[in-house]
Image 1 (cartoon, rainbow, N blue to C red):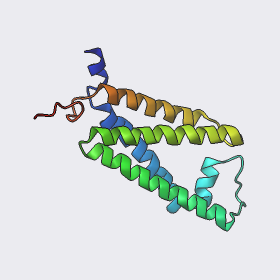
Image 2 (cartoon, rainbow, N blue to C red):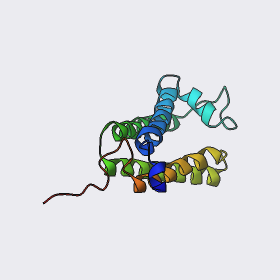
Image 3 (cartoon, rainbow, N blue to C red):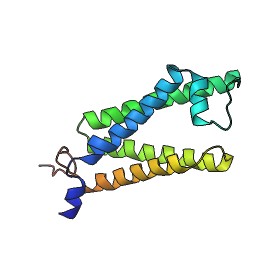
Image 4 (cartoon, rainbow, N blue to C red):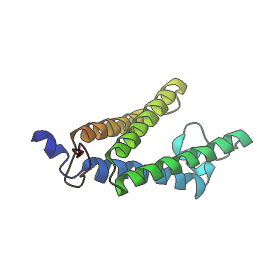
Length: 148
């Protein structure tokens, strides 16, 4: 019963995936609504200055980065809007992979503090633990017995 308390509210569906969807929407909006330079200054304040210019490749990669966040954010939104337990697990695993590798890159390049990445890895790991304990109150589809 204790593990059921963890999933009482269907936390993966109602908290974890919506959090990641909002994070991806914010990143997308920062790049495409406020501009690549605005996002780059937020993400890498010690590297990007007010007079930084981007090469065509850097500009394209920032745009592709925004497109990636739009796509994975859409997947997170689908994960909390529909009843499909395995899809939620796949999206949460993708978040774990994304933030783990992005954090590893930040360590390798010494470009950013890893705190942000560690928090997101932790949230994704907790989300996968929650998934293993479902169903919650708002999730009805995990571990269903198939008839016939």
